[in-house]
Image (cartoon, rainbow, N blue to C red; front, top):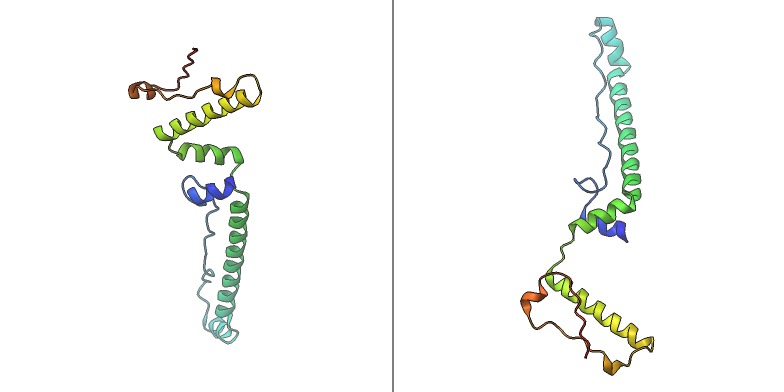
Length: 147
């Protein structure tokens, strides 16, 4: 699941995505030395140029197929899990509302734990929000008041 999220956020081959291999350079057949008249006629009759071009095309196709297999392996393997989770965590934005929701959920879980363990009656525990909005944005705080 982490790999799927990572590949959606950072597609393979991008700056932060899974690095891919560079495609192979495709070269045509090397030109031979200019032959004499008899050699040119023999090459023309035996289709030497077409054979050389076909051989170069086969070699280029084989290199391209190997490159595609290597890219598929790299995409399937991906980066190590700790690198993927680290890059995903760096790219996430956490807003003040997210932090307040987290604090509320934590407070509710602590209250439920105390009630469910049987040490404190439910009517003795209250969850209250701070009335002062300036105090809410000063960072994580836990205020305990006893009555």
